[in-house]
Length: 184
Length: 189
Image (cartoon, rainbow over all chains, first blue to last red; front, side, top):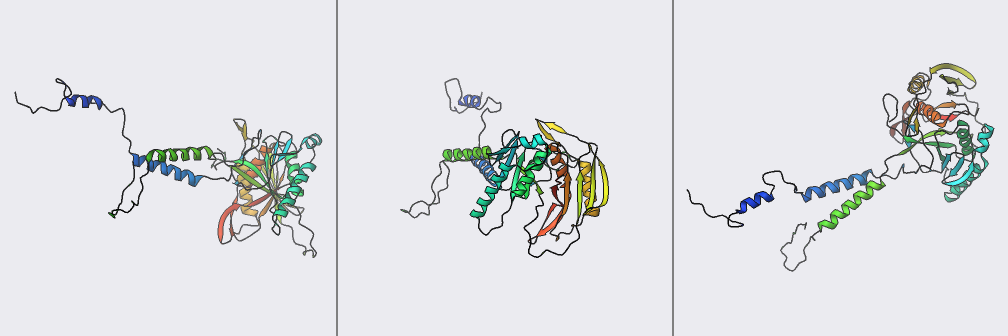
């Protein structure tokens, strides 16, 4: 029997190596893994930079309650303009009540909606006073529920045009283009 | 603790770098990520444009009589077909029927309809009969949508989407980009 130099021991009969092995997982994979702080901070900073770059306020226009917008592929980015919402029979301009579509639905004929007309005309006058000497863009965004009938759509469209907003945009959910023509 | 000390050995001089406490820094990063994720906009709204063709104010000197331009009239009144009519003033130049297949998809209460055959036909028609195809041309071909009063809005958007499928180059301010070939408006009757 060879003579060994005594190693470090925990107890008389237990070698320190045995305890170290047990703590390290007893030959099995360790439960706790080490985390490199440098890599983690790099990762977090990269995420922050990516999110800041992709952060955009455009298109952040909230849809009115109970308005289910249709989807379209060939669309443009949203612009800042007065929003006319039609949900059920109520008409809202920038969230404020602006009449209803009852008369149009009952007559089933295209007609001017006077309350909407007056509110839009007022908005145009305010814009002109705030931007003297500038050309009025005349853009209005219509936020219309998918089941609203064409007679209401056309009435609101024409009313907006007569009130000085001939460039009418229809708000939709943007869909990615697909070769088959079905939006996703 | 992180940070690199680059003391220049100036003795009494103050250290150039200060140490950063890692725990608040990671907390700050986490809070920033959470804020950006919560405020991120995942469903982007878009728009489809239409022009109401409102006549401008009366001019003092009336322009000389110009020949009316060709317009593409899209009829969607029939349940089984679309009718594409090129008109110049009151004269019908050509008429094409496109079979109509209403493939309405309803997902989570949201309706979605596409007319790929109509879009392909409109694109073909514009390529053969469109008047404004040059990138430097500031005017656009006009499409007029005819629909009955009972048609749901989702169908109107489906047809407008098909009309906006053909694109053309458009140069403005030295920059050329692809824009829809047609301007769309609604027929009054």
